[in-house]
Length: 434
Image (cartoon, rainbow, N blue to C red; front, side, top):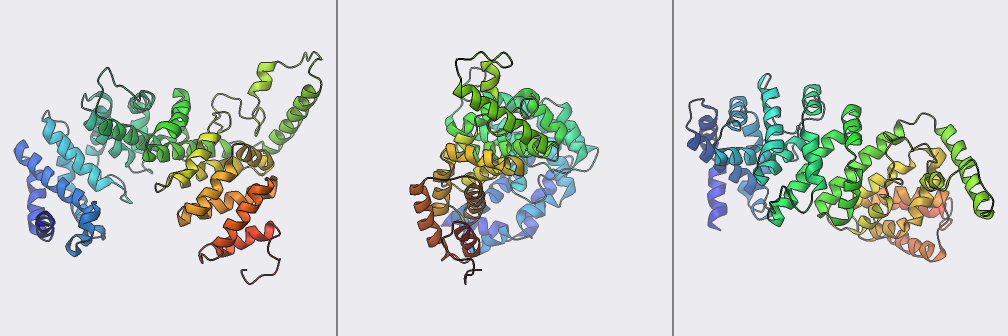
């Protein structure tokens, strides 16, 4: 109990914290003082993220708007000098400064704090240089985490990242899971590097950034993302699913010829059906390779190289599989990705069939039984669309009925559940649940 009391006392002294920031922001400060100041602040901020310390009243203030993180973020001179310290050759200084910047950036609504221009451009380039060139795995990992927290609506940041080697470095991490240049790091550090590289990748896959997304498409990281759904940590799976959701969402929304696609899909499916009925005839207008490459949901609309499709990427089954994950956010990320298959009304029947064929209903029912409230809500939306467009087996129908009736007791979900049960003809059109 001694350590929490020490931390509590230090955090209650804003004067001391400002003195530490002053040591960092003072241009003439010795690198050793900068390191120790950064180390103390990083440890203090890190302490507030530990569940044990959140139970102490003195530390609960760290979770409020006026916490230690915001105090550091608001000191512009300190932020300038923190990023300047990353350019030095003092490894320990660099590492603790990176940790401090990561702590004050993590999950903050404004993202990573950056100095004003022209220091901002230098700061971003420095982070990219550490990610791409550092021989220290931990340094690369923390730099990737900070890149993942960079503000999303800054054109200058996007331009610097687009022209940099950051995405290639991210791909190298994602595609080389077991070793990095012959050096095998400890499992924890490597897992962290992969997770943070995926966080940085999410900046490139944002649906509002088509130029950055095109770069992702050219490097073809899709197979690696799909593989991570099966082999990565829970956090890695979550971030891989979010990246796939971003890419699938953009491909779905960028197809303006949905009606034409549906017509082509129906024609293609009809031809395939006839060919299956008459396999011995010679079909001069088609090859087996072309038939195999036809997407079951979009036909040939997702054939172009720059068009991403969850079905063509073989991502549907792995996404369904991680619906059983109980760690926070994993199942919800998978549901978000699967939902992108249903954005086009013209292909919803084929999309829901693809989800059902990959045991999607089983996974959705698992979420409805054990998932978080937000995940259950998403699962209900997806299940509603499935039963609207596709038949499910009688055993699954009966199981879903039992689970949904139990969910009627959850106030936040009961109206949505009742609508689904009405669609299944289990409760009447007029009900007290509506």
